[in-house]
Image 1 (cartoon, rainbow, N blue to C red):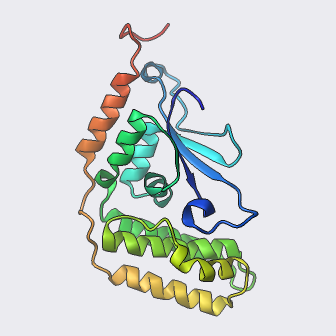
Image 2: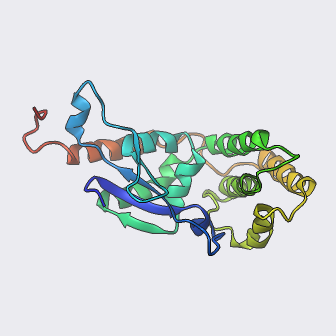
Image 3: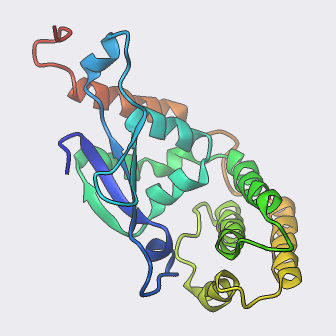
Length: 220
């Protein structure tokens, strides 16, 4: 693990409860660039791949920005039950997750699912993509009803895996999708109107202060 990593979680099929013997282990994480790196003209990266296969991480500021926009993938990181690395800062980030919630999630989850639907060819569907489209709607519906996304979907495992394996006719998949989308659009949201940006910014400033050079001056 790199010294700058504050959070690593498992996402994907293993987090959803949809894994099979052939499933990969997908990891997502958060790292913190040295504060002094932002004093230069060339800023530190906002994300990076690796070092393990199927691993991707965001710099903490980018991660917070995406979470404030109710990005479904980032929300899955905050609510994944499979946490591999969590430093004190990483634990504070996970504890902050409700501050990111807002009614933007209603639009973002529906919008991401709609985008996946538009990319699908009904004549030759990408069945894995179709499964995740439905799973995303299930997660979003749970979020607006209960205030947290649905990550573990074991209750729907058999039906979702049947979609992924191409055993469900496309009209039936589309009918489930349309029903969930309509239900999501019609469901009153329990989420706050806006995220708590002040709490998020307080966390981010604290992380930046913790990663200042000990001398308090830019490195040369």
